[in-house]
Image 1: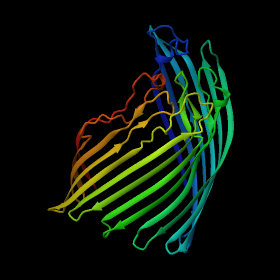
Image 2: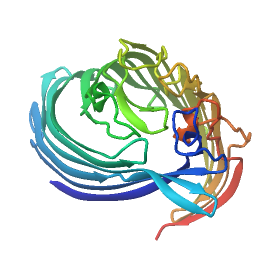
Image 3: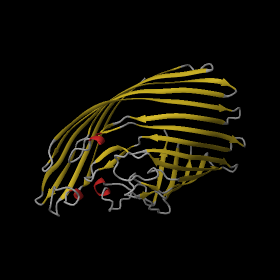
Image 4: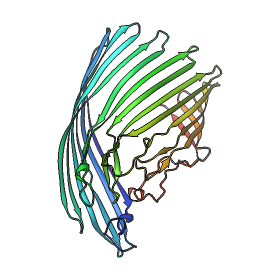
Length: 414
């Protein structure tokens, strides 16, 4: 049994001057010197219980059953203030939103040894989620105040099927079908009420089909792991932005993803170990929600078509029971789009991460020197920052890699 309590608080502030002027659909200010300040906060409290009962693992039949329950309260106040000459700040928009989630789930799985190394597993998760959202919203003229209150119950069943065989030499072959889902919810924010069709967003579901293999050869010095998968994602939930810059969640479309990933490692006799990994994938977005105004992209955002990496570690014993360890690693993330909206063709990715290190270690202490990003690559890891300028589509937003960094580290174990 696991009982946990989570308390999480954070806040953010954005320059929202772009939504103050006429021509962006707003009439809050005609003074070009006025500054818009949007502030939002989140206070989350969760009480979670997870109770699991499983068999002893003796015999050909193995099982587990569990009960999961969670109660969550999220308070997310937000407001748009206008800073004028003086300085004087007045509130143009204020929303006091509360979301209450009551989750209950029953889950379990059973495995049976079919002999010959084959094991079959059947499982599932039955969930019940109650969502209740309220929001007090105040907007200055020409808009007005309103109150939002909505509740809904979402139920889902997520199955799991797997078949695997472990060979006498440690090799493994498996096939897996699994499924996951997220409950729906409500949209409340905006200077004026959102369309009725967009007030509620539906649950989305991801079903995964996967086959894979794990192999060890040459007295364990060579290892290979590979997997091919096909994912079917229905009613994809994604955050979108109104012309005001305020967010809402929409079910945009369906998608399918096909991918292949592999990892190989080899331990040379001289103390050098090299590991190489790679991933290629292809996604296709289809069945667009007709209520989603913008034309969607043809591929999933945030999913590069190719990525990979290499890690090399060299170890050599030194006198006085010391060990020298040299390591180098590099990984590549391919180019990817940021948004479902085809009218905002923002891209990120296509960058290389690298790190070099040298370490001398004993049983109780270790001294290392390292350099990260040795090529001082400024590749864009994330092309998003401010929703009020992002929605305009004319401001370049990037999150570059951390510049080249050199450091030393001394650690001791007591």
